[in-house]
Length: 147
Image 1 (cartoon, rainbow, N blue to C red):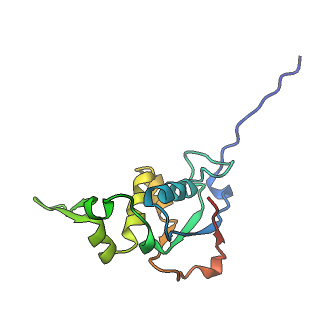
Image 2 (image 1 turned 135 degrees about the vertical axis):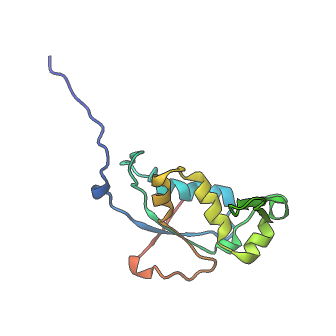
Image 3 (image 1 turned 120 degrees about the horizontal axis):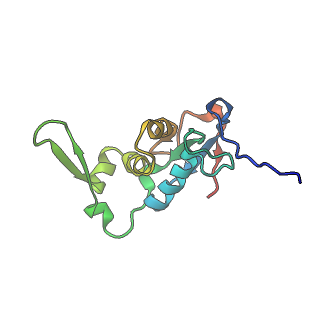
């Protein structure tokens, strides 16, 4: 009797082909948009997804300042960080954060959805967020990503 052997092919870092996608965040809900962006950065939308290899694509987010938050989150949501000094915990709400850094809401949400290790930092470097419609990545010929 002849036995069939099936083996799963793991992606190798040097074999990964990266595409460039552009995502328009205007009118989109923050969490739903960022979870899909995180999947593309990880490479989970590809058939060749391998958990221990960065096989994701590059993502450009435009109109990040026009992203929506549901309910009263624009006033109530608090972002915390620590300066590293004793008593150095700082907080800012979402409305003030958007006024100060319009791209920070999307960056914080996506970063929280990626792995918390070296691989996650490598994946986060492929995210480019811009507050308006202009971006300097026209030479890469980014394709619009359909969710």
